[in-house]
Each structure stands twice: as C-alpha cells, then as structure tokens.
Length: 488
Image (cartoon, rainbow, N blue to C red; front, side, top):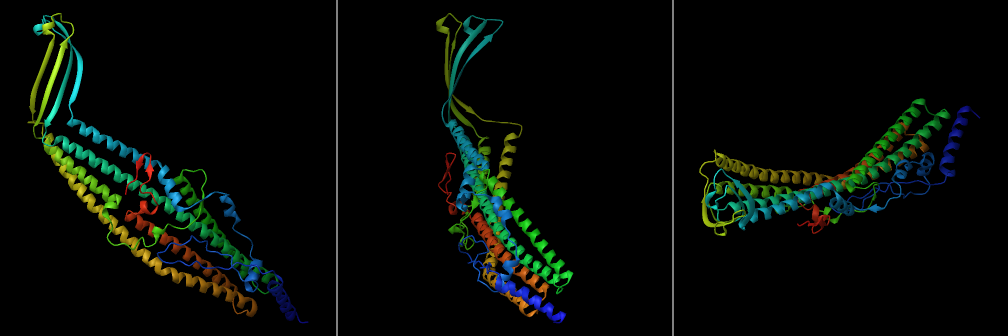
C-alpha cells in the first residue's frame, strides 16, 4: 500500500474512532431568551441539553472537564434572593443606623424649640459680702435662696420660627434616611446582579476553555500524524491560554462582587445568590413624570429650603421686641429679723435689641443667601433626577431591542460552529483557524447575551432609584429599623 494511502487510512481510523466509538455526551447551548422589560429567571447561559451522537460527541471527548476551580470555592451556603439581600443590608448597615439616630436627634430638637412657649423657672443660692451693712438686713454678709420665673407673652414669631426650623430639620433628617435606605438598597441589588452576571460569565469562560482545548488537542493529534503544522498547534494553544486567562478574570470579578455583597450584608460568608429579579423591575423605566414627593433627593432639597425659610423668618424676628411676664422671690438665710427676710417681685418685661454690632443684619443676609442656595439645590436635584432617568430609560430601550437580536445571533453562531466542525472533519474544507474563530465567536455571542440581560437589570434598578421606587419594590415601606418606621 502506498504511503499516502496509509496516511489517509490512519486519519480515517482516528476520526472513525472519535465519531463512532466514543460515547455521545456533549452539552449544547440553549440560548437564554431575554424578554424586554419583563421579570426573568436569572439564567446560567449553559444548559445541559445536548443531542446524542454526531459532531458534538467528538468535541465532548476531546474537551477536558472544567469549572470546578470556582464552583468548589463557593462551598455549601444557604441561598438568598435579591429581596432578602436588600432587606438584610438595609436593616443592618451602619450608615442606615447612623441616619436613624440623626432622625431621632432631630425629633428631640423640636421639643427643645417648643419648650420656649412654656414658663421658664429657675432658682439658686447666693452669698453677698460687703464692707457695710447690706440694705435693710443690717448685716455685711447675706446668703439668699431665690427662685424666679418668666413666661413669654409675645415675641413676634421668634419661638415659632425656631420650631419651624427644627421641624424642617427633622424633615431633612428623614429625607436623608430615605436617601440612605435607597442608596444601600441600590448597592445591595447591584452587587447581587453582578454576582449573578459573573457567575454566568465564568460558566461561559469554562465552556470556552473546553471548546478551544478540544481543538488544540485535535491539532496536536493531526501534527503527530503529519497532517498539520506546528503553527496550527501553537495557535490553538495560544487561544486556549487566552480562554483560561479570561476564565481567571471572570472568577476574579465574581469573587470581588461576592466580597462586596458579603460586606454589605455584614456576614463572614457570602450566601449563594438565587432567584428572579422583583416584579417591579418590569417596566421600571417606562414611566412618565416622576412623583417628586417620593424622591429622597428632591425631598431633601425641599426640606432644606423650608429650613432656610424658617431661619430667614427667625432672623427677621430677632430685630423685633419680646414681651414677657417675670417674677421672682428670695429669702435671706442668715438674717434674724423675720420681717425683712423675704422679697418678692412681679413685672412685665419689654425688651428689644437696638444695636448688636451689625450681627442681626448679617444674620438676615446669611439666612437670605441660605434660602437662595436651598432653592438652587432643589432645582439641581430635580434636574439630576430627570437627566439620570432619561439616560437610564433610553439605554434600557436599546438593551430591550438588542435582546432578541443577540439571542438569534447566538443560535446562528452555534450552527456555524457545528457546521465548521463537520466540514473540518468530513470534508476538509475548513482550516483550524476557521474552527478557532467560530468557537470564539460562539462564546462571545453568549457573553453579549448575558451582559445585555444584566445591563438591562442594572438600568431598570437605576430607574427605580431615580423615581424613588426602591423602597416599594423591595418591600421596605412600612418596615421598622431601630424603632423608626420607614414611611413612604
């Protein structure tokens, strides 16, 4: 038999062994269907649905096992869905408790301001020493026990403006609490989404390693038989190394976001993330005019504006008179004459500042500038919310339109890859480079499907944040944190 026929017979024997003798066991991609603006089960891009036999059996035999290097690292942990992760973060995060304490403190300041409406009573003990007899006491040293009381009758709005300012301060603290709750809920949900994203991308990277490794092994077999060059083997090995580097990068990002979620939860170990996104994600960006009264940043700006208005009223009231009723009583302790031991007075007091070095006028100007700053902050908050919502809305629309196109591209690239494999083995009309490119294109299409899906989730979360719907979607409205109810 000629040498060329012997070589062809050897190739036929090798490929016949791969196709007909190897047990059929291969995984094929079931591309995830991403329905725009609808809640979807968080999917792992690779589903084990493979057809038995055929070209996939050859690649399944050639490809090494992979993926255990990151799955084993997770360990057996209890599963947690996004709702639970957000609630646990909000309930236990120090920044939320800090905001709660500030709110409670601001509530006490209201009581401090209102106390000026009530009588002010004080007393004390005094000792007076003189070089001559003190008054009628016929004694150079007198010790007195005294008590005094005053009741504000009318102050032209001084106390009222202080109360208004304290109440506005409480509204500021409450708005900051809601803003903190929304921010921490957003961060927890973002971390949850990213953990799921990189878990899916890590699986795709491991699938790519197995696919490219199969081609590299085939190139090595062909070169051993003299049917391929060293450059083919080296190029295949280079692609395999690149796939492994990508896998390491995906695992690193996966661990990074797991650590971030673990820190937000305040746990030593990261729970396994699972489940769907909340129903409120669907249509989150399809809103018209937002409810400004529900957006914490706008609520904060409005509360600061009311606080500045109250400060301006208070500064104006400081230049006006105050009318109060005052009385006092005292008793000398070291005087023997009982008729001259006791003193008592009562009177109407009228006081008004005439000159304070320009301090009152400066206070009025400062309060006026503070009001202007608060008004500008309110306009800026509304503009920031509008811009953020518009950006998220337009991007989300683009991702929704891309989803079915990317899913179709994944299916087409998979068919192309399988055809190239068949043509390479049976007909020899495809080169090894064609196989490598088709394999890479197939897995890249899966990566784009996954990124598109989770980018859409991120944008929907941004829409919830900018419209003040984070608390309602995650069931935080009405919950109690450190004794404070989170009100809508």
